[in-house]
Image (tube, rainbow, N blue to C red; front, top):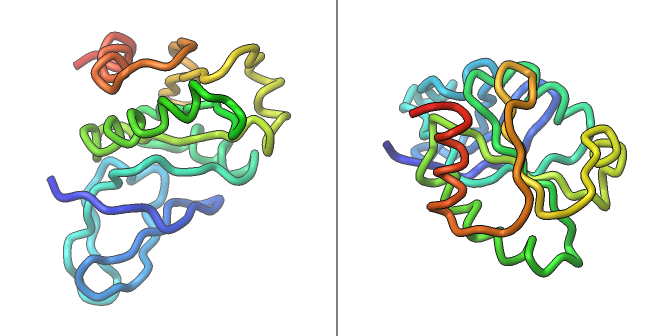
Length: 157
């Protein structure tokens, strides 16, 4: 499956650029796991393949509540060495699981209310959400293969 990078996120969906014509397209959260077509040129849109940076609590809430695929959330901070170590591993997971899992990043410095709500006491903290509910969490940096194993154990094959 071909993959693409995310341009941005809003309260309704994920905005990405068509690889054929460059048109921005919104994939609604409820359709993240489905293949869509570009609104302008009708080319198939590619699966999302990189972590999405969550900018607001509202974006987080909308995504978690409406995503059609499981969501792996990486709670991190810029000053955290292990968080910086795990970032490229999360990129690998996002690319490998494109279309089946959505990987998002929450900067705990920018969104402290989310950190408090989910009682984040150590970072990096990875949490998996499905159908709006947390189903599993784990703390600490790990390689992409171990992250994928964690996801597989939580959501199944």
